[in-house]
Image (cartoon, rainbow, N blue to C red; front, side, top):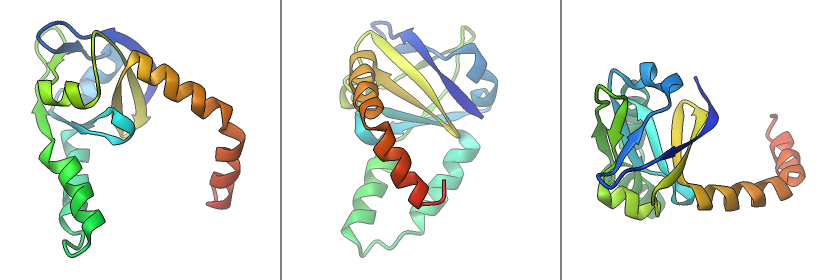
Length: 143
């Protein structure tokens, strides 16, 4: 499982060093795509395949399902980890997530999220302010 929060840099070629703790799980292939909240999602190949299968079964007659499938599938790109443990983030995805030089790689159980560091700090501060309300809403869902 992916957990934790790591600060890394992205070089001028779009290369990002994957945190050592996560490399083994991604070594057999990974996919990066547009995420929600203007971040990037990275899935191990197996988990990506499961998600893609679910998305392919959604009814195309509903605008929201078409839009979500497009967001996730059309923006996806396979990643390869090089010998130094780096991946190349495609330019169009870096633009989508406003990724500059400093990023945060956050582990969220079955996926990683890659955030521009300033955007992550802003998002995290807002979430921390409303954490009690969030916890109460999740309590209603049985969490």
